Length: 166
Image (tube, rainbow, N blue to C red; front, side, top):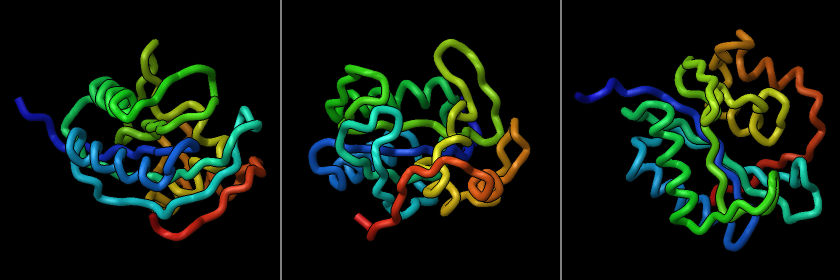
């Protein structure tokens, strides 16, 4: 049985190797394995967050149309990370690629494997800047605020700078 297409918003990040190529490779995998990318933000150069003694990140947000349920989507994205060579050594550590589900339509999920919306997104400038570019009017399902409003009230002072397209 085919599921209805659902819009999900993802955040991609990379701070190892050819960062621009890592993002492009991940986008190609997502288009092949997840669904149509209907929106893509600019690329943002971001200082490391959480664990700051590492190289800066390139981040971008994607809007995708998918027919897979949230947990299946998570497993596909983890598989893409693994295919690309991601190794998880430490929390907030360096990474070749990181793909997070920020929103899955207005679905709220809270179990051992997945929490949606992303539980920390509303505190992180490196998530909100690119997300605001492609989904400013999207209403956070639990906070009941638009992405643009969450961003305008954000206290995170991390350096996040828009750069040219990759």
